[in-house]
Length: 336
Ligand code: PEP
Ligand code: MN
Image (cartoon, rainbow, N blue to C red; front, side):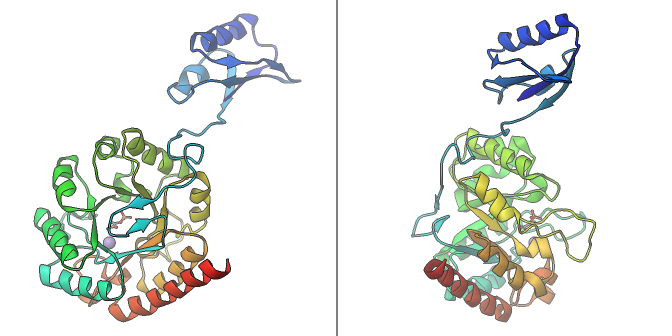
């Protein structure tokens, strides 16, 4: 960080700043500018509360140089691959995750899994504890849904992913689910993130619609700092003034986040666009921009879906989109 002090500041204040830095084990320099005195500071700033320095008399401003995360950054590692076993390697090969918004019934999930696995999709999604805006909307099948998802995925040699909403469900998810999803609304539930950091299953962390990329990566750091290094980051759109899509598809976030972290980065076009018509185009764009995968909602009859039907692809739409995506991946591998 750089501490900016106004020129002409009382010598006592300046001495106090220097003493505080020394007492915190930090090394620094003092540069005399024309209007300001600049104090570049080196040291472990990750555990220091910047407010402490900001409030020192004479300090005008603090400029942060280092990021509030380290383990998820490229300084820690160049590239990470999340290995789910059976050759499913997220970050190594392009990964398609698909399934309904919610697990609705065992037979309907079976129908969707049968279709997806026939196309070669290896990871089945399905919400079981739903984060609905209204308490009167379908809330998911809960524990029963988790078990249905587990059985269905196994039947088709697929891996499962479902969203956790409560720290008390960790044991249940660890037992039955292959990838534990943290939804956008819980990205800053630090107590949950810390506990997931201690668990043995990979975590798919979605970006909050209102979080900066630095905040997103700091949330991933919470998980990694506790020991769980198997994290997949998911961009899912951010809040915007424009209501023509459900969220603003922040497509540039893919190369930006990939440039900052070694973790695999995927896109959720379904929740960001919120309209099935645009899911295929946005998905192709994500592939071109280097996404490691996609998570897409699919339903055999979207009109009858208990949640998010409007943004879900039907089988016909999914199949034509997926075939195009695979061709695009092939083209990229051979030509780019
Ligand atoms: C979901 O993937 O089911 C979901 C609710 O997404 P998000 O947390 O991104 O809104
Ligand atoms: Mn949904």
